[in-house]
Amino acid sequence: MLSRLLATDPALRPKAGELRDALTTIVAELEGVPLAELTDRLATLGGPVAAAPRPPKEAATAELPELPGAVPGRVVLRLAPFPSGGLHIGHGRMLFVNQAYRERYGGRLLLVFDDTIGSEEKRVETEFFDLILGDCELAGVRPDEVLYKSDRIAAHYPWAVRVIERGAAYVCRCPPELLRENRARGVACPERAQRPDATQDEWRRMLDGAYAPGEATLRLRTDLADPDPAFRDRVLFRLSDLEHPRVGHRYRVWPLLEFSWAVDDVELGISHVLRGKDLVIEDRMERFLWDLLGVEGPPFLHWGMLRVREAKVAKSKAYREVRSGAYDGWADPRTWSLRSLDRRGISMEALREFTLSFGLSLTDIEVPAETLYAENRKRIDARTPRRSFVADPVKVEVDGYPFDLAETTLPNHPDRPELGTRSVRAGPTFYLARADVVAQAGREIRLKDLVNVRLPATVPDGTATVRAEFTSRPNQRLPRLQWVGAEAAVPVDVLELDGRHRQGLGEGAILGARPEEIVQFERVGFVRLEKDWAPGSAPVRVVYGHP
RNA sequence: GCUCCCGUAGUCUAGUCCGGUCAAGGAUUCGGGGCCUUCGACCCCGUAACGCGGGUUCGAAUCCCGCCGGGAGCACCA
Image (cartoon, rainbow, N blue to C red; front, side):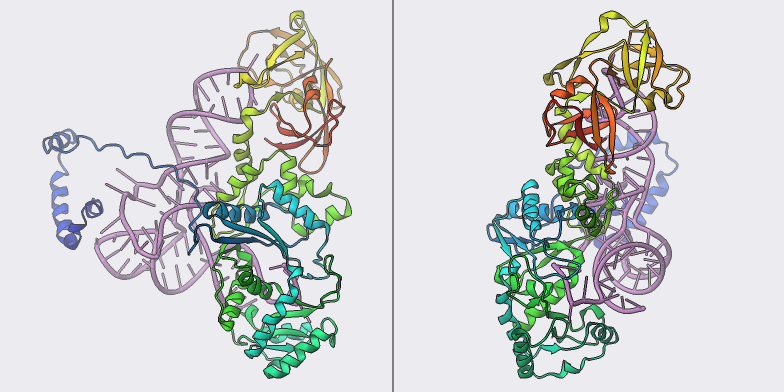
């Protein structure tokens, strides 16, 4: 009560102490008074009889925070994927966040392929340039310009010279293991004392090919006592003889990520760097270099790691499996790549809302896929036709089935008459999902939209056909099972999330579906017709999307 | 081990910078009900949170200190 008064009237705040004493007294006086009398007394005081209910708060719009110092129309952002595979949900976040800011402020969005030479394990591969371009397109992200780091290598050399001139770098000739050990112990390598002009000579020798890969690096001179061992004398340039898919063997001296971005974030006029927090140490490196050279660089914003609980696949594993052919390319559902989500009928709009809802939070999060599914359902449910599908079918012959129901008309969507109807051949022989028949054995059930029947009491494993008994027609509160009329049943092949194919039967109407159309198999989930399925052909090939 | 980052319901998130209408909002999940010939959608209702411990203050999710827990980095990868 005290804090409420103080909040309402700031003038009272200096007198908080007195006020508290006064309140204590009043409250003590009122303690024994019955509630009804209190209400009366309140009314005579002229105040509102009952406190007005608090107005509901406005729905919090998931807005991204403002970009510091952003000038409308002048924002320049960058996407910097390494071309080593298809884009996944984490990349999606990078795409959507950057795009969202470009839309908010106006400006430019650059796609800069981070294709420095990589390593033996992490190779740049040609096919991935187009793959990633395609993924961006798919995600609805159209960069204003596409650049390749590999075209800009030579532009980095003058910056190296500037750093050397400041006496802030040296050519180190330690083997990698020794370098690592010295760094961990905070011990200087012999070349650390090198004078700038000597470094200049050594740098030229690097460029001229005097050293083999692994024999020399250009290292930044920071502070060997730096509390963060990761920051001690980081490598700026190294040698590599690997062939680059775009520039071949044109360069042997390659910049490392932090240095290359310290250069390009400035030279490309990037206004804000938005990236995952796995790259925070790069911020410090870039700032260090900018301070050293007296140039101004953009601010950095980060977000934490995002994991979808069901998507446990490591990127490297996805890469291997795709490469080896164990996966069905980058659209295999097991990769959880953007392509695979699209294939499953998850719209990029839904994915965008989903990833944007996490804002720029630095927390590492693990989100159940259900959250994404819910977002997608909102978008597709109302316009998705319903169809019947049964997995692992059991033939059910219904004794006493009424003849007049041999053909029946069903709506395509229970709540959307505008989606029309379809005509279905029904009975007396049906297919039901084995799991349903077993679970409901001996019970009366409702054939959805049709009639009630009693299932046989036992259904031994492997039974192909069972007999059921017609009981009544009126709709009752019975378990409702979906069914497929035997006459018009068509084989359906469902690609599941684990990469396996499940066989089943669908109603005849799905033969009329279009490739890439999304339909809902009732009580099963949303599926999408495969893009390369020949319309009208059997089996009907679909990919499982989500419940 | 060292460095940095992060801890709000089952799961995400708003609020934290700048202490007070925050008796903490939203989404999703879950539970109940309604509607409905799906276990889907929709509508209504409900459960449920400031990691812990100190301190500052009239007042702490918010500021300070300590602890605990989680993540990332410590590559001549990106």
